[in-house]
Amino acid sequence: MSKATVLFAGTAMILYAGWAFFAKLATRNIPAEQAVVYTYIAALLAVGAYIGVNSGSSIAVATDGLWFAVLSGLCLGLGTLAYYIALTDGSVGIATSISGMYLLVVTVLGVVFLNESLGKMNVLGIGFAVAAVILLAQ
Image (cartoon, rainbow, N blue to C red):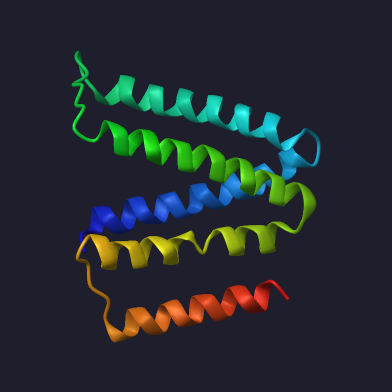
């Protein structure tokens, strides 16, 4: 695993933690649907700024993975809405722990459909993650 992978994955972890925490604060004061809209506006502005700074003078347009990107966006949007609604009614710890189990679903999908592999320690880690979420949801 490269240092860049660890660096960016660690950065994503911290940013996702901020996203979850601030989402909980937002849903205390505004409806979940409204919070999601503001979240995505801010996200699009941030990504747009990144592209503007890093793309140079031209932006390449590729369409090979377009439908997968669209499906990914639909899942993200609807999943975010469900998550914000869960935050409205419950604990940030429980909502985030349960929704965070998507990582395990993606792992299984990767093994089944993308020919990725899991070692014994990976399977043990998945078991511990499931146990942790069950304990956190109590």
